[in-house]
Length: 332
Image (cartoon, rainbow, N blue to C red; front, side, top):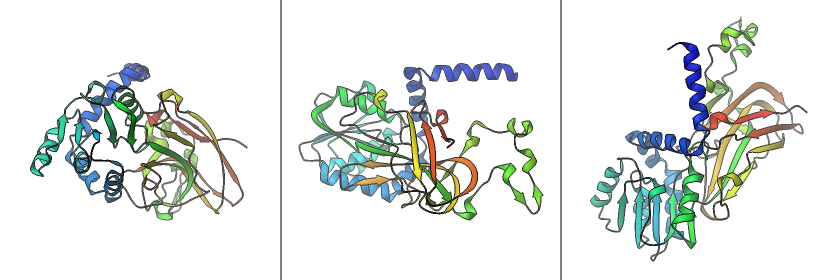
């Protein structure tokens, strides 16, 4: 395909995705296919931090008269944990992998789980739902259509005193220093065995060969040495009080005072999901490793000192598409 035609098609695709209904349909189809991969489920089941947090919350917050919906049931592990406590569990998933979940539940003797293969937006139970249990958090928290799907269920099927677990979230974008041997500088900042690449800064040949994802990389526990300041959420919301997706702020200016001397290597994204005041699931790369990874927005590497303020702007243009987000340091 000629390059000009490819650019036109890409622009048309981007324009279509700005329509929420189209975007949700595209994401839904991608999600349906992505989670038929057995390895994805193996990673989540092997994540003890994740599974233990859900088990603790379910044991404490789900009662014997509750009707529970497990949104995006996957292997059915959360539905089965809830079924030990609840009167009835509806396990919803639009992926054909739900057949595997149903077989696991039958093999383990569960009789109070109803498996439903359909998208949650068309699901309509015959009774009010007391608890919506979900793990709709993507690596960047918002990128698995969590808000659209959960607010839809909240408005249509959840009882007036019903609960969403987890329901309160904190979203972090923190300036960090990487572990020395985990750093990957920009090409023009490299010196390798006396070979200088500095002349390539701004070179059009380099620009022509960089992908859209060039401005970020993936990191995890063990890659980040420390946060440069005291971490604080740039965004917090509670699904108990949130009514519309558009209520979530998308343009945030953050001043972060540096508390520890070090190298400034980029902005790292993570989140905390609160089931209640006792059970919190964190994907911080400074805490225990989970099956989530972290987006590091790359910045030109420089030294910073305690007392300095890093001021940056976080623009979440499309909440479910992190590729559209802009996170950049501001002058002054």
